Length: 159
Image (cartoon, rainbow, N blue to C red):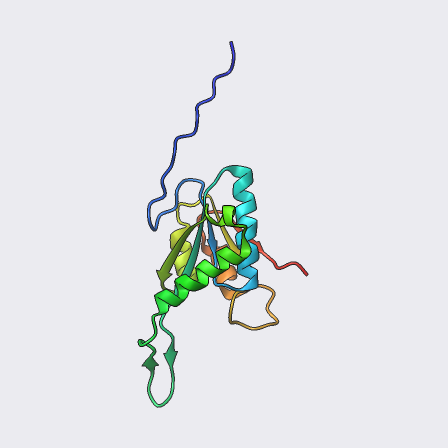
């Protein structure tokens, strides 16, 4: 008797929640995050998973005689533009069209941990924007590797 295989059910991702097996990738526009995105898309091609690129944003505060939040800038729009540009520049058009994007207010590590709480995999670059040039692993990558509920891949830039 021939073996029968069930076709996988179509899974629709819920905003803010990972679909089963989904690959969540943190993107901040840095070269490292673009390499992470490329790696995630290659992995998705092998596993059939969907990719969701997530960028976190927060209102920076200028310090002087007193803290002044920079509320006059449209930070969510800047984050969305950064994410769109990173996806477009890192991937061919047909691959970019398959990536779901999400812009979330908050710190990078907490946002990524929340986005990946039900994911099959979380992918981050080894170093994002900011930090110290001599670090081998950025603070966000270090934080998510120790606190994520799913496997985490840290992608280093090619030398």
